[in-house]
Structures are given as structure tokens and as C-alpha cells.
Length: 162
Image (cartoon, rainbow, N blue to C red; front, top):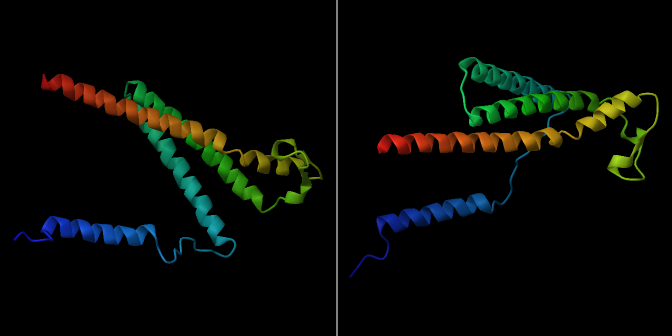
């Protein structure tokens, strides 16, 4: 008579049981609220760190003179994300100093009218909310770059094997 539960099926059953606990948790304490201002400080420091990391990556790829379409896509990704970091940093810095009621938005988000003395500050705040205009192309360039580099490596390994 065969054993019903083999070592392989027991391991698979244990993995399913463990993963079901991850997928359907009882409670997920994913957010940790910080009082003002330390949460903002840490977040802003992360933007600065990411800015310099992307700047270094851009500089290193350019210095190494990697050639190919994939590397050019990676450089475009770096530039878009550097721009995003600047816009996000400025937006977060201004957010605490803007009164959202200064914008009368009867016509919707794009048709709001900025009123009051700090119109420039309010305009910069709302402009920073459009940061996805840089993030979406950046992620596309990252995808295209990684895909192009992957296929170029595949092509090189295929030609070496023959």
C-alpha cells in the first residue's frame, strides 16, 4: 500500500498553509504613524538618498561608456527619477505650508483657481501632485532597458554556444 503523504506533497501542503496565512491575514499593521515632523524628515532624507543614488548610477553608466540601447534606456530612467525626486521633495516640503482651501475647484482638479497671497506656493504644491507624469515614463524606460539588456545577453550566450 502506497503512503498517502509523501515528503514532497507534505512540503507542498505546508507551503500552501503558510502562504494562506500571508494572503488572508487576521490583521495587518502595515502603517506606523509618526508624529510630526520625524516621519517627514525620514521620508525627505530617503528622497535625497535616492536622488544621489540615481545620480551616481547615471554618472557611473556614462563613465563606463556602456554602449547599447538598454543602457540608454537606463540613463533615461535615471533622469526621469531624478526629476521625480526633486518634484516630490519640493511637494512634500511645501505641503505643510499650503492651505488647500486656497484653491476653488468647482470645475475639477485641472480647472481649479488658485486664490490668495501665496499663489506661487500653492501652484508649486499642486504641480508636485502631478509627479506621475515623470514616474510612469521612468518605469517604462526601466522596463525597456532591462528587457533590452536581457535579450542582448541571451543573444550573446546563444551565439557563443554555437
